[in-house]
Structures are given as C-alpha cells and as structure tokens.
Amino acid sequence: MSLTLREALQNLTVPDLKDLMLHVPQAQTGTRKDELVEHIAHAMLGSQLKVIWSQLDAMQSAAVAEAVHHPLGEYSSQRFSAKYQNVPAFEVAGSKTHRYSSGKKSALALFIHFALKERCYFVPADLRARLLEFVAPPPPVGLESSETPQEGEGQFERSTEREALQEVVVMLRTIEQERIVVSDKTALPASSTLQLLGAKLVGGDFYPVVEKKDKWDQTIGPIKAFAWPMLLQAGALAVRSGTRLTLSPAGLKALSAPPADVLRALWRKWLKTTLLDEFSRVDAIKGQGGAGRVMSAVAPRRAAIEQALRSCPVGRWVTLDDFSRFMRASDLQFVVAHDPWKLYLCERQYGSLGYDGSHGWNILQDRYIWAVLLEYAATLGMIDVACLDPADACDDFRSMWGADEMRFLSRYDGLCSFRLNALGAYVLGLRELQAGCTAQQCGHFGHAQTCGFGGSRHPQRARCTVARPVGRTGGRGLLAAGPAKVPGGHRERA
Image 1 (tube, rainbow, N blue to C red):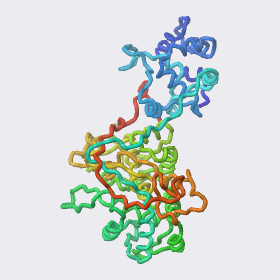
Image 2 (image 1 turned 90 degrees about the vertical axis):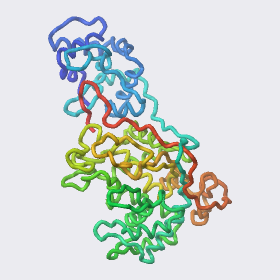
Image 3 (image 1 turned 180 degrees about the vertical axis):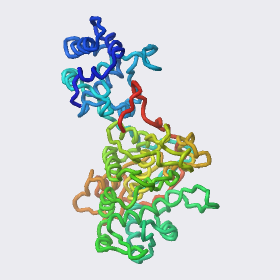
Image 4 (image 1 turned 135 degrees about the vertical axis):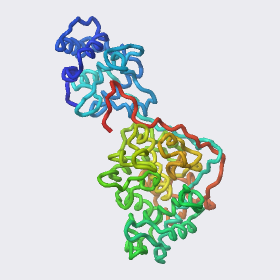
C-alpha cells in the first residue's frame, strides 16, 4: 500500500481528526482540516511517535506489529482474530461521538487506516518505515497438537495407512476386470459401483451405509467408495470406455509400482483436477450449478489446504478448529463461492446463504476443508482420523433458514481431528523412503514401526485397522460464523 499518512488522514472527516488529536501529546488546537492533518502527521512522523506508541495496549500493539511486518503493510481482522483469538480496540470504550452507534477513535486509529478503494486496513507507507525501526516482529503462527485426540463419547479413530496401500491395488484390479460403472457425463460412480467397492474396502467405509427409507431421509452415504473411482480417473490411471472404467497404460504400470508411489501420484494429480468440486458433495447446499460463476476454482483451494497440511507435525493429532484457525492466521485463505446469494438451503429465496451468518468461514470454507481431508486425504492414507456421527458433532448451522429438519449440514461434519502420518509425510514430500527399502517390499506403513520412515527395519505385522469406538469427545467449539467485526463499520475485502 503506497498511500502516505497525510493522504490517509485526508480521507477522514474533521470530527474524526479531532478524535485523533486527543491522543497527540501537546496537540495544538485547530478547526480547519488541513491544520488538523498537518498537526497529526507532524507528531506521528516526528519525535512524538514513540510517546503515542506507548499509549497502545497489548492487543493494539500486536495489531500494529502484524500490519507493519505484513508484506503489504495490511491489517486483517480475520487473520488477527484467528491468531490471537481476540480483537484490538479501534474505539475508546464508553465514549460517544458524532457517528451513529460508535465511539471516539482510539490511538490505534492513528496507526491503522482504511483504504476505501482497496477495501482494506493498512499502515501508511511513510509511517510504516518509521515503525519498522523499533516495532519488533510478531510471534509466528503456531499450530496446536497433542499425542492423543480429544476425548468424547461416541468418537472412533481410524488409522488409514495400511488400508490405503492395500485398497489402491484392489481398486486397480477391480477396474482391470471392468466392473466399475460411472456416468458417461459426470464420471460419478453408479450406485451399484458404490456397493461393490464398499464391500472391497479394508475395514469398510468410514461410516456404515444406511439405505434411505424415503427420499427425505438424510444419510451419510459412501465416502471412500465414492472417492476411489474419482481419484483413479483424475490420476489418469482409469479411463472411461462407455460407462465402464478400464485401466489406462499408466494404470497397468501402476499395478507393479510401489503402492506408496501410486498414492503420491494420485494426490498430486488430484490437486489440479477439475473432475469434481469437493464442495458439490455438501449436497444440502443447493444452487452450486446455477447460471454464472457461482463457485470458485478448486485448484487454489486445494493448494491452500495442502500448504497447511505441510505445517502439521507428523504423528500428532490436530483438531479441525485449530487447523482452520491456523489457515486463517497464516493467510492461507480461499473463496468457495463467488456469489453466496445463489446458494441456498431448501428454498432459493428464504434459504439463501447470502444473508449475514449464513456464508461465514465455518459454513463454506470449513465444510470444504473437511471434505478434502476426510474423503480424499484420509482415503489416500495420508491422515488418520477421529470421528463422531455427524449428527452429534456440529450445530453451527441450526439457526439458518431451512435447517430445522436437517441432521447435519455435510456428511463430513463428524470429522473432529486428524493426524498426519508417515505415509502422508511421504505423499507430501516431507520425508523419503530409506535407501534399500520400498513401500512394496515393506507391505505397509506404521506410525513408529514403518520400514523406510525412520522406524524398525523389521516391522511387526499388524491386523487391518478398523473403526473402533474409544469414547473420545466430539463437540468441538466452532469459530464464530461470518466476518469478524471491524472498526468504523467498514467491510474488508474477502
């Protein structure tokens, strides 16, 4: 942001400038706008800057530090609240001013200004240069993790490494037999295919598949069984011949390749595919296929999630709340829908997601993150997961119009926490196989006993891992929906 302090002050009204003059030591009285601007600029760019800086409290100082050391000198209320779980005061508590339902500007407003054209908060360039001389960089963003997932009744854990290494071969063999049927228009697997693949999954799908009693019933449905045909098509290992999948030349080679290498290639291909928008699987939200550009491009969304996954500690559990908050605090933000007004629950007008509180990060971005993690990262064996029944996990959508009869907003609402495992670290390129050992020779991966990932060279053979109830907690505290409150009634750009 190239605006200077004087240019930023010129955008304020005289009453606003008078509010700011109250925080300038030995301020001269004045009534004309040019005089007020010059008095404030002289103090902020001169010897009084550190005196004014000392008036800021801890949160206000942190806000200035975040903006000053941001590459563009910008302040984001969403990024700040995600990192500090608090907001700085841009107004003096209990004060009244000329503006309707707002207070007098605090000293923080001398440092951070709003650019109307760019729709963002920033520190003016000349003031930022002065502040960089003595304002220390803010602490780095941290991602909390634990040895075990949070406890809660009804939660189960699922270790996915060994399952994925076996299942990718099973799926390739099933396609070799030309038994997988997909739509010739959408490439989505047929219901008969979902049943067939569900029976071939090691340990079954993440949730039991329950048949609908009537068309209004809300069921979880297949997750892994749905993901595998999509992954193999996106990875160019399977191609459509009419309505059936057959192995491509690359698919035939994959049959004799190390399974871990096949999984790594599938993930890399999935990051760029346009075969499917994972958010379309949140089928309670209608209007995604409407006219015009409703949904955003999927590749930038996946790239942000992958970058956040690379920051996760291997072998430690991370809650979905902490992961989501980390993404926002680290500027790994993305847009799901260009126009939320075109999305809706049940009824297009009353149930539109364009209303305040209906298109916040927790409704759109969080649901997309959960879909990618559970349906694709976990299916590929990259993360172990701890889940609840989705009907028992989230209630942040209950106040939305049309949600009264819904058990859950998405089939992924039950995902509570995950653990990046050794196979996931390999797929992401964070670790490599040890010399003289391949995943094909090893046969399976383990958390601490994985041959090729720093563990024992003679791993113990383990039974197939299946979902097991362990009495762990669900009920995670969701972050507030909608944009964070910002000063002066301005709305920041998305």
